[in-house]
Length: 109
Image (cartoon, rainbow, N blue to C red; front, side, top):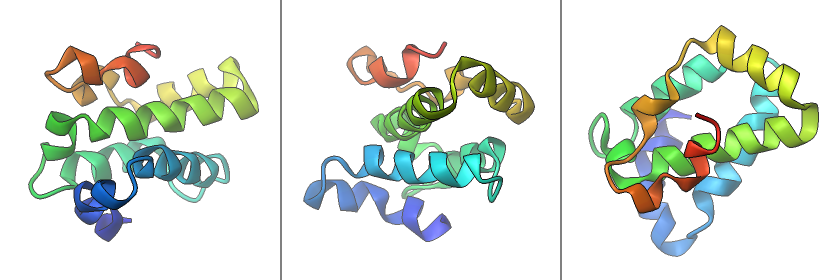
């Protein structure tokens, strides 16, 4: 997954919906207990050209928001809350500075 996050900013030029598709895939992987939301948060933070760049660009918000949407749609609020609680990640840390790019994630804060 590290290489996927490292190249994600470039992939968006060819596939603008890449963050949403990646979020959907990661949600399934999280639900199958292959990787934790905490680990995905770390990968998002460290991904891109340099640590934090996916957050700055708004990509982190799109990916994480998509993950949470899929989990909520497929398993409901209760499991989503459990996964979030166990991950101990702070969603606010993944919000980009530009409020226009916060919509997908802000719905879960």
